[in-house]
Image (cartoon, rainbow, N blue to C red):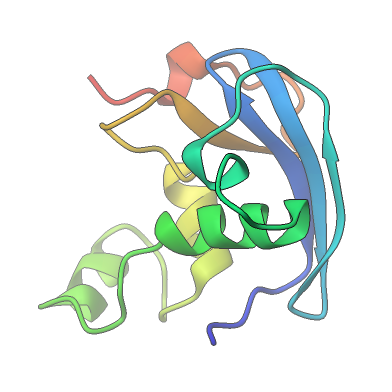
Length: 116
């Protein structure tokens, strides 16, 4: 299992909050659905905490990806760390409009991080 360092944020659908959550000591501590748009993981037969954890893990780049260390270094991430990568790309995907807004970036909007 991959380790998540402590952080909290909101899973967003475009600019609409969907799920507020926090991670402590690698475990999902809080998970509260606050919106109507939810990713697939929340429609599967998972608990809400399992669903957000699965979502976060699905948004990471595998540590076995070819040249991952060089790619991370090129964007200023010194070593493989899931939360640093999520902070860099906000868990954004070209496949949908879900992303992560960290609690320490309250003014960030979808238009600033969306993939074209």
